Structures are given as structure tokens and as C-alpha cells.
Image (cartoon, rainbow, N blue to C red; front, side, top):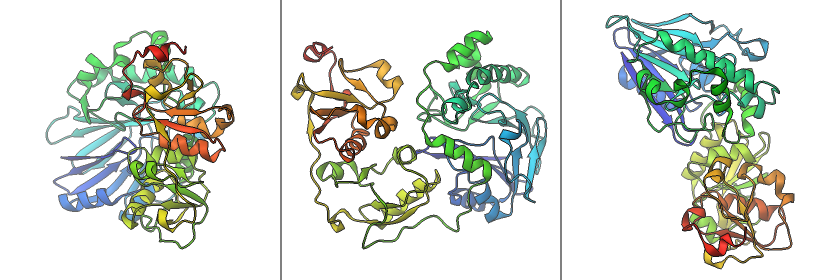
Length: 455
């Protein structure tokens, strides 16, 4: 038996290749659209990918199931649980196999048994792996967004992100029931989750790539609660803001993502087309902000914030340092279905005159300043600058009218990773006096008497 995991840092998303060393067959579970890593690993291991499976209709990235099946001829194994709202629109394709609870996928001497684990979504499946020549005791579970290291999948996304009103509490109760059905599985069972720390699909995901069911029974808050009402209260408490693009991801993954001929490689342009998105490193952006451009520095946050802030049919020109950076940025955008990248330019090729980003330290704050906190709600619950106003970054573009125009705006996040994005949003909304709090709130040794006096 061969198990290989793949982790995308930008999406905090895990996918898996499982192979039989005897028959040289393999299955990939929850792939991204960028399928090259799976193809390369299968080749390296001498395996042939014959199957691709999904745990559920994903909300946080565009599925690569169709992409990988088109490239390899593999069968696609999709859930047939849930009502008509949760059926795949491409379920009738000739290479699709629909799964119900208890159905089994055979990969050589291995089997993956589908378990219906609703709660995060109604159609969710987990796959329990058994290596039959070794033991009839199940070896692993690929748990998708049902069970994480230290957490469980959030049941509020259907209501808060996809507008299925009245589903949060129902989903929480169904999720509690799904957890109880783990009782027949051994403590030794390895848990391979669909996400790690940083994903918006849970509130307290751990950083370990793998766990065991026994360890989760001992340490995971959700598995230690045995009262349904208490579980419902706790699982709905403190969930982070759901990114607005989750609703569109659900729609696209349900109807079937378009199959790409290749990963995008945007062309260098003489004239930009559509919206300028500046993906240069943050230090370069601070040295010269391009008027009118939306700033999203290349790195771990690019995929998430692009999903939040860009329309899916909006043409985009990237501002990048070079072709390699443009390619990587366009690849990351494609992972969430933002395929309308027309090309890229360098900052020096634009007619607009860049200007340095205004910044100040905490000691330079004035009583008249409007301090804007763009962190998430859970971050703010742990620490805040007294007197500051909270607008999460993902909501800032739609709430820019809530920011006053008659005084200096000082924007901050945790450590400075998100404040350049907020700076550009406010500038593009016509706010003239915008300053960045250098280093964010992490650079402040709270409590600060002069700040406390403002509250």
C-alpha cells in the first residue's frame, strides 16, 4: 500500500494518492485543478491512476476531479447522497460512478468504503481504507471536511455562505450524529483530513498533516462532547467569516469545472486589460503603490483574498515582477476558478505614477485618528486597540462607505500582511488620508496607556 499526501499552503488544502503496489493501480482523493503533482507521483511510484474520488462538493477551491480524469482516463467516484440540491450535474457522464453509504471502491488489493458523513454538507462522504493482505482492520480514513485534526467541519457554511437559510442548527445536529457513527472504528485508524490550519472550513484546525482516531477521541473538543445540545452550541460558536466566493465555488463544482488545456501562462501586454491586480511583493508595493490597482501581494493569502475581492467574470491584468511570478499568480487564481487573467505588465510599463504607502508607528497615533481593524472576528476577540473600528478585510470593499472621509484613517491587521490590501481598497474607494499601522497590532506592546485612554 502506498499513501502520498499533497498540501497546498495557499488553500490549506490536502489531497491524497493511494496506490496498490501489487497491481500498480492508484486513486486520487480531492485533487486540485493543478494535477501535475499527482501525475508525477504516480509515474515515480510506477502507478496508473484509475480512479478519482471526491468527499463532497467543495466550497473553497475548484475541484480537479474532471481535470485529472480527462488526463488519465480515470473513473470519477462522486457522492449520490443528499437531496436533489446536492447532486452533481455531470453525474450522468459515462466515466462517473455514484456512491452511496457502504459502497466500496476497489484499488487492487485495497478497498475504500464510502461512509455518509453529513453535517458539513448533506452529501459528504468519508473513505475508510483497508489493506486486505495485511489486515482486515481498517488502516485509514480520508475524512474530507468531516473530521479535522483538532476540529470538525463547520455546519454553518450552507447558511452563511450559500444562503441556505435555516440550515445551521440542522447541520450541527446531523454532524453530531455523524460523529457518533465513528464508534465502530478502531483507535489505530489514521485520519487524513481535507484541510489544515488556516482553512476557513473550521475554526480551530490543527497543524499536523495526519492524526489517529484514538488521539482525536482524547484531544478533539468535538469528539469529547457527548450531549447534542452542547455540541450544537459549541460548533456554531466562534466560526470565522465565510469567504464570499464559497457560494460560487459550490455552484461551479456542482455543475462541473471547465477542463483546462494547460495551466495559465499569461502573456506580457503592452496595454492592460480590465482590472489591475498588483501581486508584487509587499515591500515593493509599499515603496510604490499604483493608483487604481487592487493590491494582493503574491504569497499565502493571494488565492483567498482574490476569491473574496474579484468577480469571476472580471478581466484581470496582473502587475508582476516577471513572467515566472505572473505564471504562479495566475495558477493560484485558477485554483479558485478565476480564469479571466488576460496578461501581465510590470509597474514601470504603466502610465500611472506610483506613490509610497504612508505608514506610521503606534506612538504616532492621534486621538482624532480613525483606527480601522481589518482582521477576522476571532482575532479581534483575542486582542484589539481600544477605540478602533472593525471591518473584516473581505467585507471592506462593500462597506467602504462606512469609513469617514474627514479624518486620517489608520488601517491595521495582525502583522502587516493584509493592511496593504486594505490600503488599496480604501484608496480606490476615494478615501484620501489612509495610513498603514506599521507591523500591525502585533508590533504594539499592549496595554498602551495613551491608546487605552481613547476607549
